[in-house]
Image (cartoon, rainbow, N blue to C red):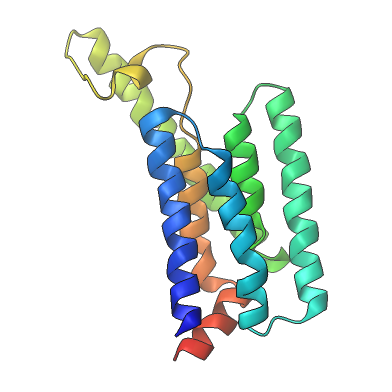
Length: 168
């Protein structure tokens, strides 16, 4: 029963990050902290061995460093970098390529949607809620793409497969 709660909590926090980013163009630190804090509990409850946990932690650290470099070059926001690292904790090395691919795919779709919305706004159509995204040069809520990638790949990861086996 606890595993089902933990899996739902992880999915909820990831979804919350996407919604928050879409609404405010920020991902608060507490979201990434909660996501990272749930990881050890999920790992222990799913029976993941310590070697695998160490590898997951190394992947999370590498994702954080990568995010910091992208942030330093003004490619992503700080919240996106921290959220990417926290979500990466759950992915594992075998599924990291799929995770990055899904993020890139979702980011591409998101960019196309924003470009189309900007074109529509130039024609004089008002998009009040969407207005902050329709200005040229405005930020892109990349947390949406990160969340999509995580939610698409997580069910296939080893840590979630172990956890789901316990739920069944």
